[in-house]
Length: 113
Image (tube, rainbow, N blue to C red; front, top):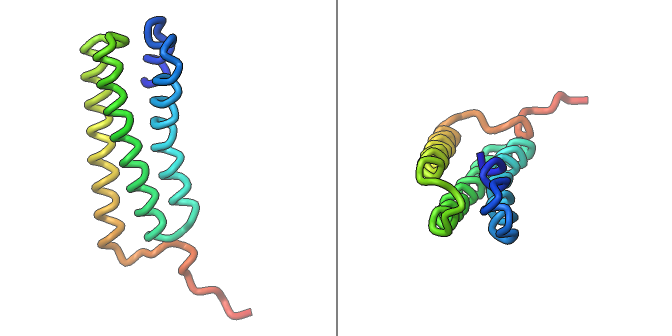
């Protein structure tokens, strides 16, 4: 959705905002993936927190886009609602990870060799 918005003629000419909002949006999934690849809950939670912060950046930049009339209100509302849902999902999974006994594959016992 962010990439589609930033290709709109009016939005596309604001190179700084286009770059920032795209990087923030991409950062969400990149940080979730990086945390997962570290194979431990503490790191996964930490990187999810960073991803959640990136969602906050996207929400802020959406306000800049609507203020500058780069996107219509309906698109802002849809994107903002998606960002809110994403924040809620990330937070819920972080809560689960804090409660679970599963600690990640890097903490599995290695067979004696």
